[in-house]
Image 1 (tube, rainbow, N blue to C red):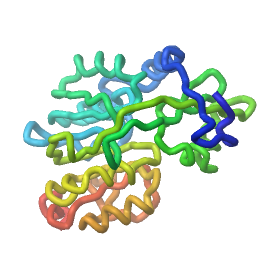
Image 2: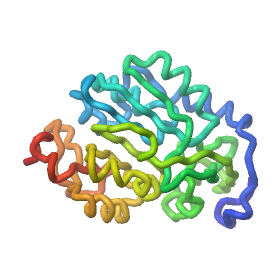
Image 3: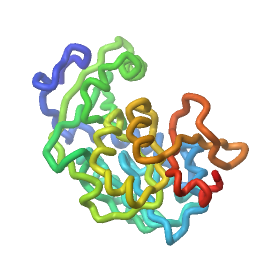
Image 4: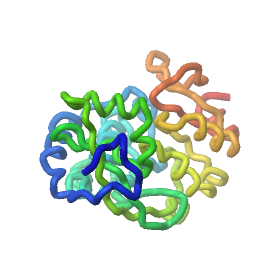
Length: 259
């Protein structure tokens, strides 16, 4: 691995995923807790039932599916994860979740291709939850500050893995709700789902990694931005910088209690 701050895509070496074992064990122990809603926003999905279809883009180690079930959602789930090192743990979790859960072992993007994802290392810890197709996203000041918080000496390194990427629209899935956490690659994922956005119009919960450009795309498809209000247990118009933006299509505002 080489220094993150000084690297370019052509410089970043491949990293052996067998080295991730201790980090994955730590992540499972500290962050994957059955029955716990790990983000309050997931309470929005508490009423989802068998007629709904939930797509989890950026599964990591399954916290979103655990949160969905813990909140009360009882719908089938399709999870997409780009990092092959996480698949063994996700397969085990898929076998125990109460929701029908299908794991898709590839990433999502604008076109079918082979790509690189970049994995940061801080001290002895691989920051697998922030693996991304965008090296420049890891190098942004906010990302660097966050990654350095894991270190004693402030040094952060980066390696890459070669991964498979497909378009969402080619997967044959019609979602009613989508959660997306693509570590800065949200725009790339959205460019691979024009049919889904224009025809099926799912409610989208997107982590604010690149909110300005995501807004531009979602507005063009007729969506409006909202945030989840925990006290009201409902979506309200987005009025502040929040962790997740909810996007609801103009034609589905009333059925989501927003018209």
